[in-house]
Length: 252
Image (cartoon, rainbow, N blue to C red):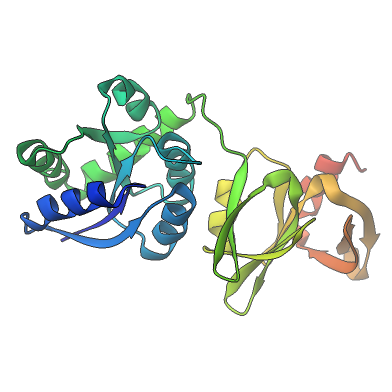
């Protein structure tokens, strides 16, 4: 049974697609979202097998959303839903395995599901790997992190992050504008922010290296970091990361 997440900013479109999918026994709709940020949050929690994603949405587009989803859920496959076939090429560039045109037609939706059904586990992994390779060539690059605070989903720029840490089974993200919750593990966050100034310095901490103000030598060759925006906080550095951190900061 495939778990599906439906993402469209128009309720009638979601209802129509949900109805068509209900005719098919091997798929279950586990959630619906009306925006990119909401989709990202739900997907991180539900980890669906497939996401039906509208291209044209208010605010964050489906193409931008797909790039974030691919980063946090590399094994989840994406099917785009669009009223314009001109987006088909772009859809595949950002990692879609198929696309269906609006208004939805039963046979075309079934065809997309058949394509998914025919993926064996190894083929599913291979498809995800091909998508990852495609994404490295994509021109779309979203430098924002979806976070939560008091029930609101917000997107914050990577540059605004000071550090993130594990707390009570979750991940807290400290920024220049306050502290937020990240729906995912620290390892997932670490994977997402590759090629940025955010770096995992310890099993429990990711730090924005651009905001490091002081490196404090400590007991038996260990170090602590002090960062801009949180002067009272001392962040531990794992011994295995010391050499790389020195390289990043240009220390000898």
